[in-house]
Amino acid sequence: MYAATVGARRYVFRDLKTLLARATPARSGDALAGLIAESGEERVAAQFALADLPLTTFLNEAVVPYEDDEVTRLIIDSHDKAAFASVAHLTVGALRDFLLSDHATSSVLTTLAPGLTPEMAAAVAKISRLQDLMIMAAKCSVVTRFRDTIGLPGRLSVRLQPNHPTDDARGIAASILDGLLLGAGDAVIGINPATDSPDRAHALLSMLDEIRARLDIPTQSCVLAHVTTTLDLIGKGSPVDLTFQSIAGTQGANKSFGIDLGLLKEAHDATLSLKRGTIGDNVMYFETGQGSALSANAHHGVDQQTLEARAYAVARAFRPLLVNSVVGFIGPEYLYDGKQIARAGLEDHFCGKILGLPMGVDVCYTNHAQADQDDADALLALLTESGVNFVMGVPGADDIMLGYQSTSFHDALAMRDLLHRRPAPEFEAWLTKQGLLDKENRIRPRAMPSQFRALLPADGG
Image 1 (cartoon, helix red, strand yellow):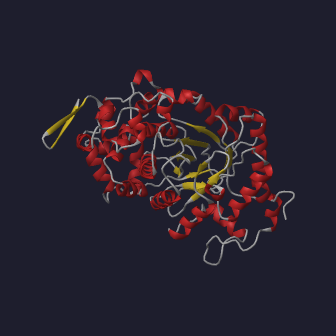
Image 2 (cartoon, one colour):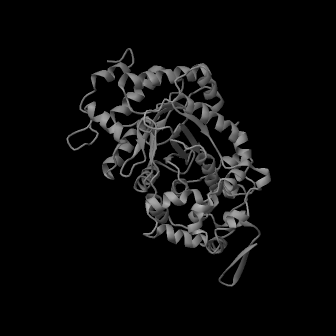
C-alpha cells in the first residue's frame, strides 16, 4: 500500500500498479480501462508517492505476476544487478534528478541501461515534464548496424515506407524513387504488405533486394510480414535482411499477435544465420504502441504507458536494429488528441533510449483523432531535438494503404536542415556519389541520376 497527502486529503493506492496508473498523465486509453486518476489532485498525490518510492520496490513487486507472465520473468531474470548497483539506493525522484544532472553522461547511461527495468523507466516518465523527457533522452546514444550505421550523434535516419494498397510494383518503385531522391531510406526500406500472402511477401522482398543491389544502396530492406511468414521465407531462400514483428508488454498481448519469446528467438537465430549484414548483425525490427495490451484485453489492470515500456524489455532481449513506437496509430480510443500523442511519443522515446534501445517514432495519427499535421510537425521537431534514431518517410505523409497520416520525405528533410542532422554516414556517402548533395552537403537533387531511371514505371516519361 502506498499513500501521499495533498492539502487536507490523504490518498491511498492499494498496490504498485494502481500507484503507477494514478500517477500517469491523463489519456483516453487509461480512462477506457478505468485506471485513470479521478482528479488532478489524486494524480499529483500519486506522483508525490511515486517520486518517493525506492527503486528496489520494482524488483520486489511485479505489476504483472511473475508466475503468470513470461515478460515479467524476462524482466526479473535478466536484470543486471551490477549495472543497477550505482543507483540502487535511489528513489524514482532521485533517479530523475540524476538523469537530468551533468553526471549522467552518454557513457554512464549506456552502462546503466541493463540495470533499469521498464517499470523504473516508466515511473520516471510519469513524474517528468516533456522538457525533462527530451533532455534525458538526448543524452542516450544507442548505435546499431547492418549495412549502415544508425543512431550516431547528429544523425537522423528515415524509414522509406513505400506502401501501396494493392502492392503494385510500379507504385512501390515510384515511391522508393521519390524517397531516395529526398534522402530517405537509410534506416530501412520497409513495406507493409497489403495481404498476408507468402508469395506476395517473397515477390516484394525480391524486388527490394534487386533495387538495393542494382543501385548499390548501403541500407537494408524489410517486408513487415508476420514473423512466422518471414521464418517460412527464410527457409525457402528469400532475401531476408531483417525480421519484423509487432510486440507488446504482456504475454497475453503477445499471444494475440501470435507470438511468444521462444518464437522470436527462433526468428532472431534464423535471420542471424543468413549473415547478410556487411558491417553489423542487428537483424530485428520491432514495432510497438501504447494501448495494444488493452485492445487485446491483456493489460492486467496496468496502465498503457507502463505496458509500452515493458514491450521494450522484449525488444532488448534480441538486439534489434530498429524499434519503432507507432505512437498515434491505434487511434483516439487510446490517445485522444495531439496533446496526448505528443506526450506518449516523448515518453516512449525516453523509455526506450534509457533502456538501451535504438528508438524511432512514427509521428502519426488516424483520421478520426483530434490531431492534424501541425501536431505532427511539433512532435517531429521535439523528437528530432531529443535524438530520435529514425522517423518515417511516407509519400505526402499519407499512407494510402494503412489509411493513416504520418511524416513525409520532405518533413524528414526539413528536420535535417533545420536541426542540422545528417543521414547515416554510409548512406550519406552514397548520396554524395549519386550527386544528390549540394556544396553545403544538403540533400538537394538537381536531376535524376541516370541509374535511378530503372525505377520509373514502364509507361513513365
